[in-house]
Length: 466
Image (cartoon, rainbow, N blue to C red; front, side, top):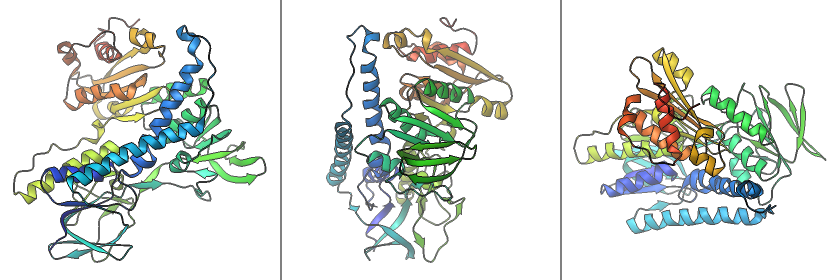
């Protein structure tokens, strides 16, 4: 007899949303999570970082009060209060989730899973506390952990991961960010705005190298203008503790001394559970899955960062919805009809200042895949709403196939990019063409009009582009 129909190992966005969805389907489910529900995202990642982003954004705006016709104002940073606000937001969200689980009677097993073995027509999970729980179906949602560099270890005191930097209660005077990806650029932007001397050291030729090259270069331009010192094509050979601080020796012969170092060179799937009598298929350390999130083992699924697809909270959540519906179809012996997940059409967001967001193919990827492409652009400097906001840096770039005008990529650098990209995601995921914009009315004055004119520019029909 099973304890539950489904056991989910990991309570991050993928794990907890899947548990609630299965509960809505009437399937008995429990979550094994060694920490609090919400995982990295809610407790030590996405949400606390965005709380800091807002504080930094407001601080920056207050310093520019004169530009808005207000008296000059030099605000003081009380970082302890910024830190406390961040913690309150996290507590409110996590507490709310715990209430949802309590109300729905979904058990949260606060233990650490260490091994999985086959049981009769199901699976048994052993925890470090010596307890065992069984279920017919398993969902592995164990997430990822920060990478380290050879000879450089994260101690969360001087050399920090994103988790460690969010636990700092005081601002560092200087910070070196090793890694110019999404996480690195976000924290560099935050700390620079708060007044810390900030460096980004990136081994690759440009920042956020997975993004469209034109967008990446413009982001670097904005960050440099804000005072961040950026070195691309540079690697850290060693970090030495000195009386003056942490000395970083780079492969280009440069040395930098700072108070703190953020190591943000990526994350790797976390699969620290032993399968005692079965072999779980993996590739490059990530769990192999099919379009229904099934692994090679019967009735075992995997979602989120551990699958190595896209390390985004909303990717994990969407994978979980697919897995939940597939399990529901098996339990109730009905047809499974969830559309196959197109990972390229999942929006990606970087909460720097300015914000960066994208969906679909970059211009280079689109050319490789489709041949000739058409590109439409529209600058926020020509947007009435952006001008009124005093935030005009950046532009919208939309990419379409030349043979059909089908939209295949959208890239936004500028105000509210992370909110705006949902519109691009809808159009691209629905296979819309540039002509589809003719049946849509965009409100005026809004930032969304920049998306409209970017799409119109594909056919040289933008009204306000100079």
